[in-house]
Image (cartoon, rainbow, N blue to C red; front, side, top):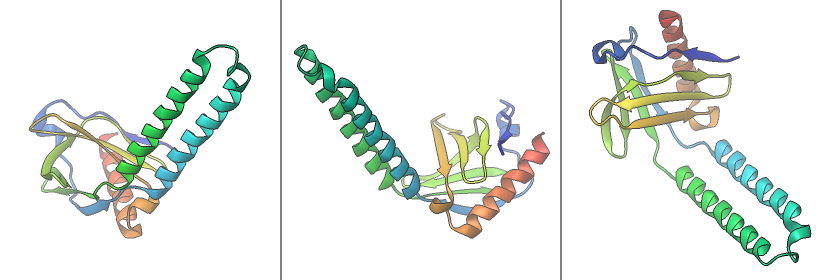
Length: 164
């Protein structure tokens, strides 16, 4: 089941209007998402190794290409590990103003795209009002406490009904 909150108006005053406040929701990096990402990288490297194996001795550049690909996969896994170890963020709505508290401080944000809400995944795109920098909040059940997960889903559903 896919639900989306459509793009809000570009007017900065109306972009932050919501009717119901949302208590702070702590979103930490998901271990499940990290494991899935690393599994995909390992499957990619295994499939590439199997595909390139017959050509390894036919030309000098095949081993070099294979090595570069494996190096890129290793870098991607390292970036994924760094993202897994990142700090948790807190998202809340107080008096119709969206707040995102990160390690950089408290940021005032507004929704900048659609919100994807599946049964086990929530993706929320927000944009800082001052600098215009965009953030993507990805929430899975293992990255949020069960009470916060329920509260966030209910709050988003209320917003879906208002904006549709």
